Image (cartoon, rainbow, N blue to C red):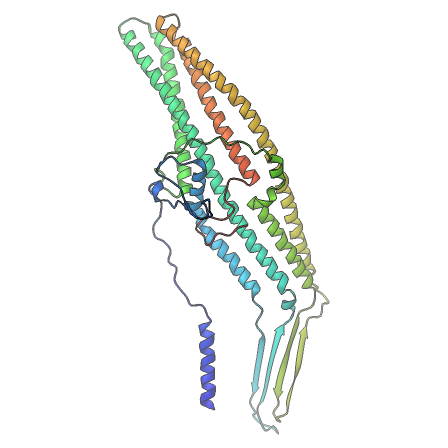
Length: 456
């Protein structure tokens, strides 16, 4: 009998140990893992094909602005932390699904003297019933919190993609401005060198060449400012893509995004697409379930169980046990008030975000109309300025126009051209911002390598 009891005990211990999680080391990385060029990045988009399969972004030719946003989602170092955030949320859900273990109490009293004939013992078991009352609402709240975090993480990806797309727009049109300024500087420098040769031969005076030299110095300063900003934008984009700051690649010409025809319909249903608004809705539902939990928690804590006793006279007894709190001082009023206030706060935050979104859509649409009108006018002015430069150049060669006036014509033409680039950049940035406000143009599932992507 003793051997049988020992075997059963050993088996029970083995089963308990087998159900425990074992420790595994997770060492920290010792080196940075920045890519040297765009070909080294992850560029396979899960679920990005026409049939729902994977899609590979082509990186050996100019990359579109939209694909750069996807590359940022797939490679941004900060998005890698999503794995830990989502794992924590799932761990909380697992914890909420667990029912509290029964409580077991054992006591033994050895007989030391007196009329007794045996040792006394007591055994009891009890289960927390109040936790079962709130079980369903607690699990529902935890489920909503997991879904909310999933939506928040998707919104983080959208923000990263948005930043990468805007940087790409700035880099493309900034590159156009730099090339136009470099071409103008080359032309002005050539004219200045010819005038310097004429000055050395005594054909013109020093005052005749000074306006062209001033124009060249001004162009050099403006070009230096453009190059510095361009370098900063490249560094910011490389950081988002997880590449070294010196990495460069070709950016395709941004496609002109036309505003959707059903703009107001899309604006009225944005809460069904935008991850941040979906996350706020899920957070509100989680808070609502927490209110239910707190209300159910008003009932006193209740433990049900049974006990078995044997005294020193070998008198045995058993029966049920009930342990509960007397709700005299606390009836969970504080938790009920706190959860209700949290629910109200989330409701107001959601309403505020919804109102802001609607206002932003109308504002961006108005900006787009204004920019379109200004861009059309700027293009006409640029063509007119270009024709005036051609006429002025002929007059300058004939000697009927001085260097100062000729430099002014060229400066005006360059300013008109740069103005067009600025307006085209603003047009593209406004279109991308409008897409984000409407919840369009970006994946509806998470793409970052942080576990299995989950739809909203």
